[in-house]
Image (cartoon, rainbow, N blue to C red):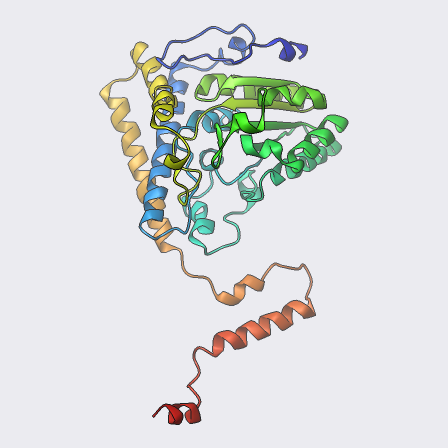
Length: 372
């Protein structure tokens, strides 16, 4: 796998206008991907974008407290997630809703945290994906630890950590890479460089490509067009193969763009220009794959209609699931905090129960009399 160090600066297999590009270091890793499978990837990206727009609408309508859009990053998430095996394990940030879709996370469970009704959305072991980490970069440490566990167990399963460009400035990410390199942990560090860490451009925090940092830790890296689903899949397959065969960690920088806000509480028009957005809109991951499929004669009206119907059905199910989530018992916040009974927690629970009960009690009669 030493060829990893000689690969192209930015790998692109599908141009923004839909032409299939050749890349000697990557072509063989996706030779098996048929046109029909490309159509499936197209469907995935359309569905995930529909999930994103529906969730954004739910937030604007007051049904969700917050939502972190992934608009524009569909190829980075779908291309990498579809390269994984079911026994691999995902550790993500709060934006990898497309990865969650590929792992089979229930739509209702995807909404729970953002609706404010649960501390986490799903059982990680049922889908091979941990619930999102809101602390920036923390999941890279979790992924490295899990990967070491796989290594100790003699398994060829791989852990993959997703994070953004801003997270690369966090200590957790750098510590995880040091540890992973030292022990050759079977982990993939997947950085979605979407150009903005909230309102800070990537060029402010890094004067070189983010992928240039990893070799300093002893970790091979790749830099791919993150809006190219095929290039992302090839890079992820290379990294997974390296990890499974004892080659240790790999760092992938998927160069993409966050076309929406950082979260629905953000206004990106305050810090980036309309011309920049237009430039990246021309590189849209969905339209370029549609153009490739059309050039191959497999993008008739039937495919578009089928995909859009699937996307609408998913959006309906997600909305219905979101609105059906019941409000939790307020005292449930004390559940699953400690493995064993804890007197301090029980005291807090009792005090909180008394506080809640005070809202249902009758006002003091003497106070009422003073008001009259």
